[in-house]
Image 1: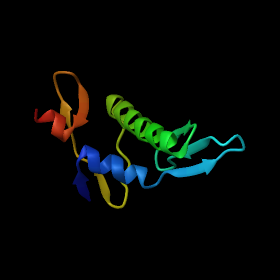
Image 2 (image 1 turned 30 degrees about the vertical axis):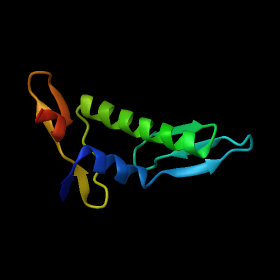
Image 3 (image 1 turned 60 degrees about the vertical axis):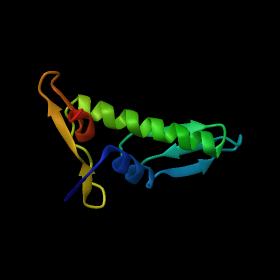
Image 4 (image 1 turned 180 degrees about the vertical axis):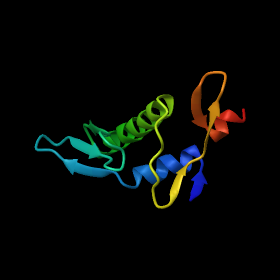
Length: 96
């Protein structure tokens, strides 16, 4: 298994996003690799921005509650546990 950076993990997760055009012209985005990660936007561009925000929020929430990160294409997020806060944080943030 390969451990990858925050940005690379977010990009990898977003590569699995599924866009659907709704009857009213809006777009729904589901990220099936992250359970329950669904959002929408008025345009495809807005939906893509919202999907990135939803993915980041999903990952941060999972880390906060101690959930394991999904392994995607034999890759997972490189993170560390911040003992002082009792949180898991992306490795790059743990080093600063």
